[in-house]
Amino acid sequence: MIINAPLNKNDVAKLKVGDEVLIDGIIYTARDQAHKKGNWPFDVNGQIVFYAGAAPGKDSLVAAIGPTTASRMDSFLEPLLKLGLKASIGKGPRSPEAKKLFKKYKAVYFIATGGTAALLGQCVKSAEVVAFPELGPEAILRLEVSKFPVIVAYDSKGGDLFEKGQKEFSVKQ
Image 1 (cartoon, helix red, strand yellow):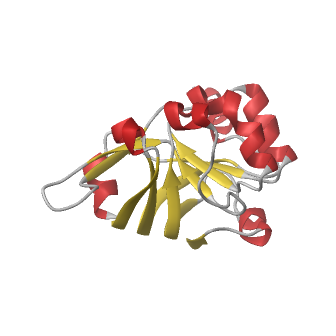
Image 2: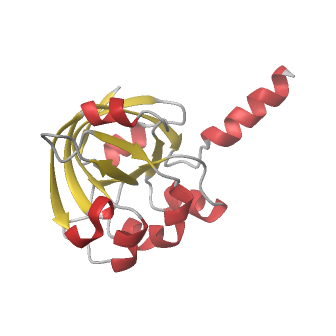
Image 3: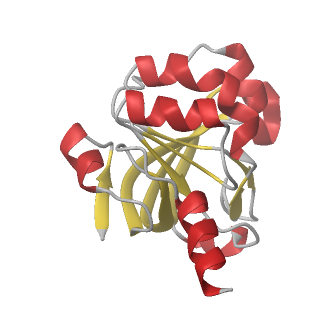
C-alpha cells in the first residue's frame, strides 16, 4: 500500500499491524539530541518523524539512512502526539506506555529494517537541514521520499506486531 505524507486521520485509521507500506512525500528525521531541544521548526500536525541519522554522500546530503532504536525517544513522544504527530519510524519495540499513547492519540509506529541504510537512502529524493545543523548527523532533516518501505508495528487501535509475532511463534512450536 502506498501512503502520502503528511498523513491525515483517515490515512492512519486504515493502517493495521503488519501492513507493508511505501511512503511518498515529506518526512522529518529527529534523534535524541534534537528531541532534547524540543523546538520543532515545522508544523508537527500530520507529520512522520523518522528516528535516524543520515550518512552524506559525495553529491548528496543523504547517501544512506537507517533507523535507530525508537524506544530511546519514548519519553519525548507524548508532546509530539499532542501537537498532531501521526507516525514515527524506528526499529524495535516501544515501551508499554508508548504503545498506549499511539492508541490514545490515534497514531501509528512504523518499523524500518535495520541494516538497510543504503537501500533506504535510495528512496530519498531530496534532503535539507531544517534545524540544529550543529548536531551534525542528528540535525533535523526534511526528506522528500518515494516508495520508502516500512511496516506497521503499532496501529491506531492498539495492535502490536511484536506481540502478534510472539503469539504466532508460540502456536507454531
